[in-house]
Image 1 (cartoon, rainbow, N blue to C red):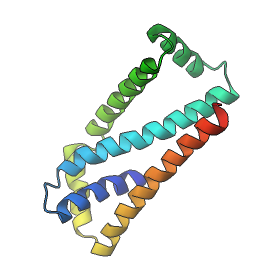
Image 2 (tube, rainbow, N blue to C red):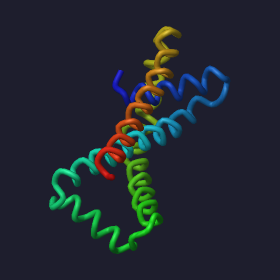
Image 3 (tube, one colour):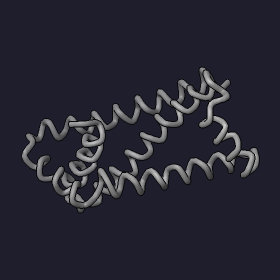
Length: 142
């Protein structure tokens, strides 16, 4: 399974195990995947702007923050906009209803031990991406 499938599977498994609607795992998986991707992309963006401050991507974000003003709210607004765009892309592609149902059928065939491992693996994926993000902030952005 790919890391994205692990995240979706863990959400599906947790909801199904507790007797709730397993289709809500599609929304939960999409949101969690977008958060993880945002953490990784933000960390990569920090690395890129640190080592190459005059590249077009860094210039774009500097101009975007100038347009919204240099405040915490401008960063939150840009982050929220990127997260919403990423959620929509994931919702329509990897997390589409047809694709989610196809993946869920495959998960039904897996043994319970494997499904339990996906929960731990999804937590590890999140923790690694969050640690990467924090490391880039504390080591490079200071």
